[in-house]
Structures are given as C-alpha cells and as structure tokens.
Image (cartoon, rainbow, N blue to C red; front, side, top):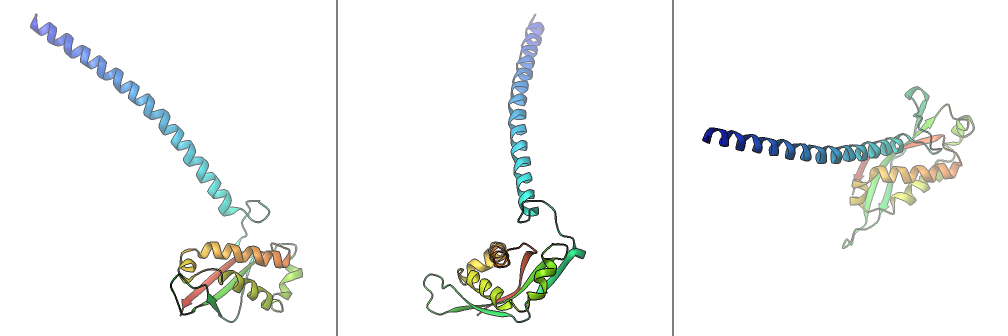
Length: 171
C-alpha cells in the first residue's frame, strides 16, 4: 500500500511539473517572439538609414562609379574650446569628397570643384569650429554628415555623396 501511495505522489508531482513547465514555455516563447520582432524592426530601420541617399532610395554607389576628389592642402582649423580651457586648440585635417560619376549633375559640377574649393573649405571650417577636440574624436561620422549636407546644399545637388576626414591631428 505504501508503494502505491508513493507512486501516486510521484505521478502527481510529475503532472504538476509538466503543467508548470508548459506554462513557463508559453510565456517565455511569446516574449521571445516579441523581442525578436523588435530587434528585426530596428535592424531593418538601421539598414535603411545606412544605405539611404539624400533622395531616400537605398541604392549604393559602386567603386567604379566613384571618383574621389581630395582637397590638396591639409586644413588647420581652430576648434571650440572645451570648458575650462584657456588656450586655443587647432585641428589639422585632410578632406576627401566622394563623387557619383553616374549622377546627372556630375558632368556639370565636377569641373568646378577646384575653383569652388574655397567655398567648400569655408563650409568645412564652419562645421568643425562648432565642436571641441574631444567631440571631434567621438563623433566624426556626425561631422561628416553635417559637412555633406552643407556641401550638397551649396551645390544644390547630391552628386557628392560622401565626405571623408583623414589624418586628424590636434595641437
């Protein structure tokens, strides 16, 4: 008789365990599905932002359709003083513009890049002067995007699709 009671007790504990496991699995699975959907949505939005050009399309410019125009001289720019600083800090940068050779405005504006270099440099200086040296180190992509918007507004075209900053030095 004792063996039957123990068997019934074990069986009832086993059934309770299976029921609690099933409840836990359903609650975890639904939460996991919702989390996976959110991550997928965020990844999709980020991918669109990374690949979108000024018109909102997601076409990327291939390397064979790209011409890089490097501003020949490195630029020395006085940056914004950080809090508590008494001396000016200078930033020396080299800037390159990536041009889309397949764009309709490329043939029209590409020959004018050298003559308009002063205007382009003034836009670059205006943007970089708004940041401290530490901010420049931390947010180069944001600075490049802001310069790009200003240069595209200067030309009224998006045939320049990327700005690259290289050889940054502070002094």
